[in-house]
Image (tube, rainbow, N blue to C red):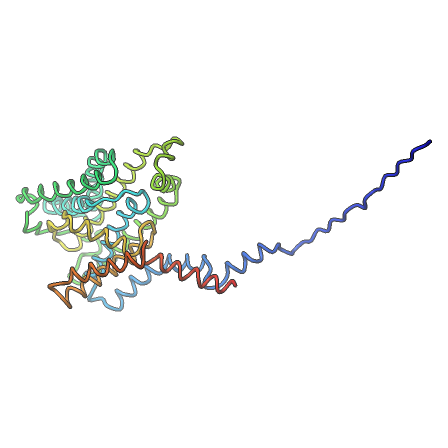
Length: 355
């Protein structure tokens, strides 16, 4: 008995290669990335809007150039704090210690004959970085409440030290008689504040580019990892203490630069530049728009300063009360800052558009 086996061959599957026709996900991505709600459009708008708004405000109200300069300086100061609070997770109440160090360094050098703005600004940065290294090397060995108390102690020590050394710092009367030579030997500081405005705006722009490069570098991402889970980062071999100390020194240098600009633009250094109140104010400015975002200080600082000015005029006696009410509303209904609300609104508009 013979058994025959038959093999059935399946027909070869034809493969058709289509060229020039993108896949559906690429089509969807292309559609999503076009239009005024695309991420690229918002990125370009966000990159140019602060600088266009600053110049446009100056052109519309040139008489307010000194006030605009102070806003730019506080933006730089808040940006330095954001590197600690927003990206590294270091909440400090003594950041004004570095701001005041830069301010007094530039002012004292000016009185003793060194009046070049760029040189004194660089030396103010260096002095603040040294102070930040000295305090940070000790304070960063702690965390949480202990660090907060040490940062508060640092600013109080420097404040009282400057007050006691009145022969050098001017004490309660402040450091007066500060003069600086023209910027780059060409642009003299004037009473209208035009030179100070564009000088400060230029330095802020350079500092912003540096900050953007820093937080998007591997070092910046390691800071985010330390902020989220420092134990896991330590377990994979990240030198947490060294990274946090480096970030603290960089933030100190930026704060010192802001303080030096304050001394140069006003020709005066007040004891308030080393106060706990200034540390609290800049922390509120940062939280107002949202920490951990490059453009947060550009929104939080002007809003806070405008609200402070308006409330002080309308109710000089109780304006701190209204300021507290504003912060309560912010914490209750805009947790994370105003930029969080803006992001939610933009995402809803994108969802409606893509639906």
